[in-house]
Length: 121
View (cartoon, rainbow, N blue to C red):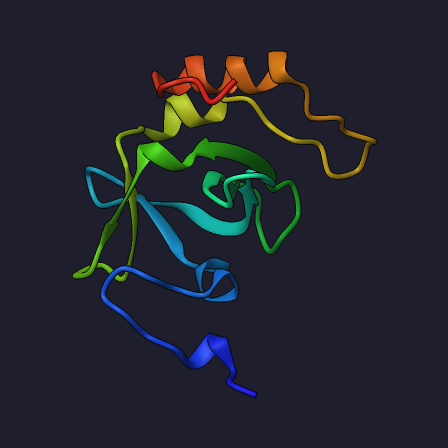
């Protein structure tokens, strides 16, 4: 059986290789890293990247869903770039991992609107 995590292509990547990838803003500042990817169950398309941001040594980090369409992969950086400054990210929608969180279409629309991304919902 083929280990798909070892397959490489110019435009394809295994999801577990995306987790941990650094996210930068256009100024080159490191904002955080991708913790997970949210996929549409029917189409299989990536819709959101969940990025960790802030905190120190894992304490106080926040989880931010970023519309996948807002991310651009930069081969030179080996990470994703998003047109977002740290101040805007500090007040961005979050997912509380310590509480029961339910993703609703209204929440998804609010995330898409916050980032000025085309709405998935």
